[in-house]
Length: 108
Length: 117
Image (cartoon, rainbow over all chains, first blue to last red; front, side, top):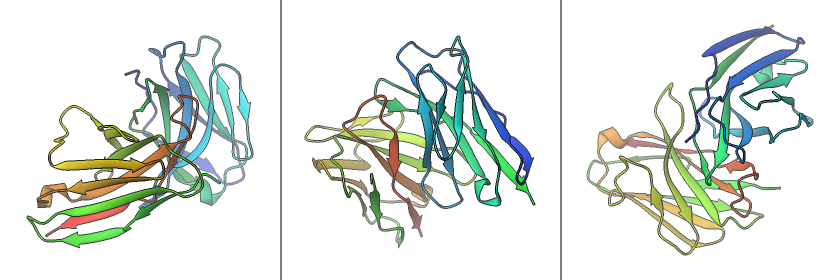
């Protein structure tokens, strides 16, 4: 199973953009890149996913490197409600394996 | 849309008893459901992949006779923790995909906090 590597934690000021990186150097050609976030004592919430091209939705943007070995989740304006653990995972073979994630702290 | 309901949200049981957790997809058909467990301050660990009408596929190290998974319909999967012990205390989370496709997002339940005394 292809693995992902993320920083353990990051901090951001409220109202500022946040760039959350993810490395996935062993990604296969058919793996999609997914991002989820989890608040304490809740199930994860879908954020965004993509294959090759950059993706935008109402929550965030996903920038995928040309070689697909890394990606960046972009929160355009962080709010206090964005404080969560963010997971970058790859879907392949109908499996979704979670890595350790990045704990995002948003400072008021 | 794409709501997954998990019940109960928390349960306390005595050691040696069994506990059943239900996972329902409310507004879509889920051919594939996944069961995860999560210990405090740790990531989600995939336990098994459940396919409607067939036996679940368990991850290495997960005892299939202890964690019974049934996926009898396209909207319901259950996880039964048999003969629970304190070390089984954890946060159990189910998820489902639309049609089980690789490019389909996972939709998660809100989890079940199991405490075994």
